[in-house]
Image (tube, rainbow over all chains, first blue to last red; front, top):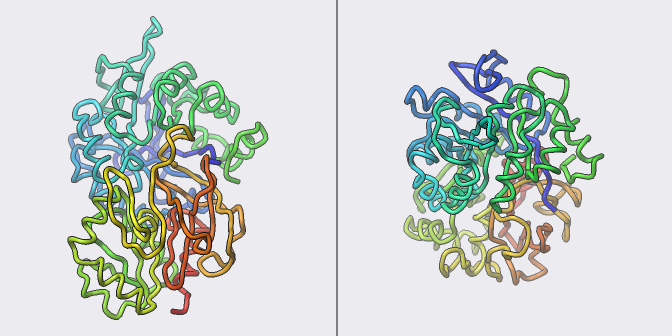
Length: 252
Length: 202
């Protein structure tokens, strides 16, 4: 049967990789190429590469950069950031991306989900949803790297994404991002239970146990993480060994 | 020289990178005439069966591929490229495939596991050697697809994968080979499979 995936997330901003807290307070964490090479050697399940400033700066994806990274990437690569058109998606796939992540465009031009899905298949459309929890417990979707409120609910956006042909949902809690205090299990659970496509839990992983919680209590199909791999000694392989011991099916 | 067919659909770049990484002499071909003299052919594919087959026909590749196979040129279909090898698919309507192998492509049942089948899953080897030389049963490969082959000839099935049902994930007959997962994205095991194809004697 299918295995649970553990995916490092690489956030790209102004020439290098960064990691922040709550989509802010960015720290530099090295070069993208170096990270791709290391994760390739370590046989991680998949890589997620997101250019977090492209949309806000109204830039197109950096095709040349993705081209270079993909040359070293013999594992599945999801690329997001700045994708606004079918042509953007096609160019990224042609230079070596395997999946296209759309976030702001999924809200502003949702027909793009359908267009990419019909042209290249649902499996290469990842709808990335960033959500914040309001004090009353209500969740709201934010776009433009978490800076723009939409008034949309993540559950409803995820369902629309699925209906429009998305293959996966990458679901990030802005509140938990970078805090390493654990995933927002309520958010993950709500969305996972509302759609039949896989949900990748993101935002907040600080330990392997958090990953197990996202899978078990959150009902996620996969876990993404960044800070835990950038700033601690914990590795994707050890994460999977832990998950295996907890009874999850992983690739070892 | 290995020709990778570019008919305007999908991710050729990764397949090409992996073959080049293995030291193969690779050419990406956009015109059927360029298949002349190719020692091997790789038929990649990402997307929907109908649109892909239509593109393959519109670019004039169908007959030259079949002719090359008749001449014993090894052909490797990857992902959707494997599905093209069979007779038909019911992905968004009924579509005719290349018909090089018996079998139909159909969607995973709705009452089974989540579709698309995305992620690392195991190859259970039914016939060792050939494309799978040196690959142990139970090895992991990376899958991304919603449709699978049913009604294949058991003699053509080299490996199967369990996703709610046990279906053919690596197939082969004569010089025709197909692999459902993406070897170019399956790290060490995937590169081994591609190396087997690169080093295969026609």
